[in-house]
Image (cartoon, rainbow, N blue to C red; front, side, top):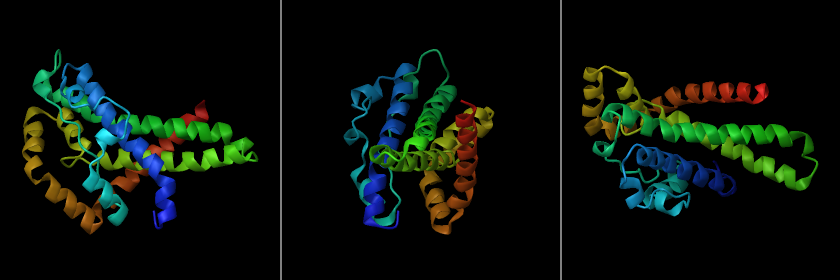
Length: 208
């Protein structure tokens, strides 16, 4: 996003991506027995409760921002361990973004032959940022560094000793993440993931 025009074009996709990402976290936590997201008004697709205004401002200034994380109390989970419950809650966000990207890619394919129609052409132009933003958001959040979702997904897959290490790493997570971003290592990690996810979704679209 190199200009104000780009920001305006991408803004709807960004709002949709972060809103449904956070909503998915809250909805899965609620399904597992934790009422915290509902009590805090996060079980909604209204973007406003999900926006961190500092992170939103940073998005316009530095082209890197963040949403307001959904608070979860894993001790409220029922019928599942805290470790596995947190893994499912964390998977829900990137999973929702991939679902949105898949729907966008499918619609682009279906509408592609009809782009001579002005409104269909405009729709396709708006769908392309939706696909891009959702794939990037999913890929970035899959980096296994706290506080990103990937850290809790990995923690759920590791033996207990590895899980404890990942949770102990949380106190240094933001520092590690900032270092990865400043040094450019974050891009080297998540861009190949994004490429793989795009290829996978593209293949699924063409199977339909």
